Length: 218
Image 1 (cartoon, rainbow, N blue to C red):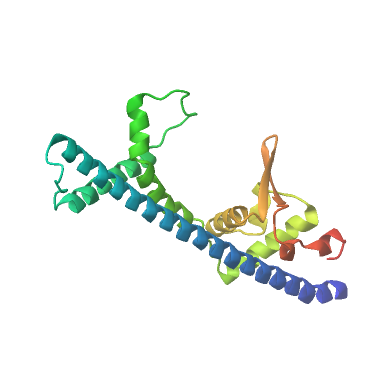
Image 2 (cartoon, rainbow, N blue to C red):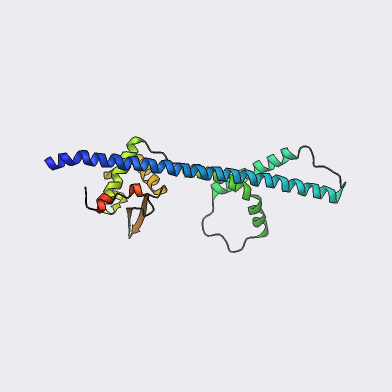
């Protein structure tokens, strides 16, 4: 009993250290995700500018071929382009919401290829939201629960996902914690027959190696 009492403060300190390391890893992950958001936003803005310039040039070319070589694009061209861009973006959003199951076809009809080309820039714009969804935040309680789960997995080498409620009873918090740990590549799932096992990911940072368990220390 005395040994158990003496080990409690040590285990509490270990969990706090693991929670602090996990918090730092989440912050680093979020900065990386924000970097991708910035790059995706810049690339999308550049693509829209290029699309605007190309369409403007094609319009002038068409007007020069069919009419006055010195003709200028209509003054309402920016409004027309913005409206068209909005319609295409809404179309891309609806297409993504509907989705399509199964592998892509080997050959696409010409109309579908043209549609893919027209929706390329709107799809890249919508992809910015996916980068935002990669941002993860865990509360102090969730960090401690996550740390406890990680230490249990480190001790036992693997934990069935169906036994995770022993460490995190609340289902909503458990789903949030496990999904976050999978997303930031601290955990990974391995399927064996009909069971799913949680393992520490080999890609996790050095601060979350939990080497003391590999050495047999509590």
